[in-house]
Length: 138
Image (cartoon, rainbow, N blue to C red; front, side, top):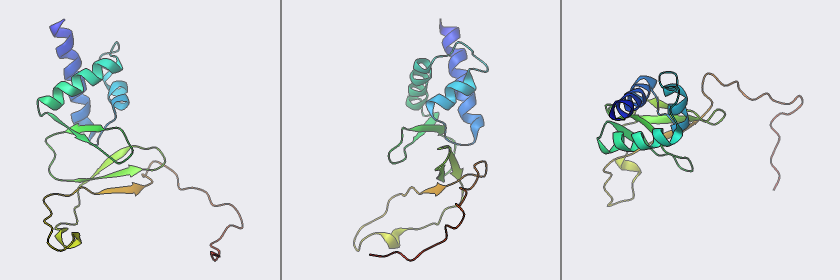
């Protein structure tokens, strides 16, 4: 059973490392099943926990969403979530020191930034004919 577990863990680790973006457990399952067809979601969760405990992968937590997983080898970076397909992508640019945004007397120790919009694979929403910007009445 140890060899099977090692093969499953290796497939899961390889999928996360090769993705270049944070993956949901379902995305990990679908990609790893190409190498290990009998892989189950429960096995993905069990191995993700082991890889987290070993410090090989990191969890990416976005508000209102389940954690996604990426290689722990990444340098400091941020994320973009497509509001259409819900995939999450790495953003390697950083605005830098955000200490000026903190209230007076507070010390910023770290920051996370998530951008939201549409990825390059998802089409822009179509505007209905005759629908322009109208003044907003209150």
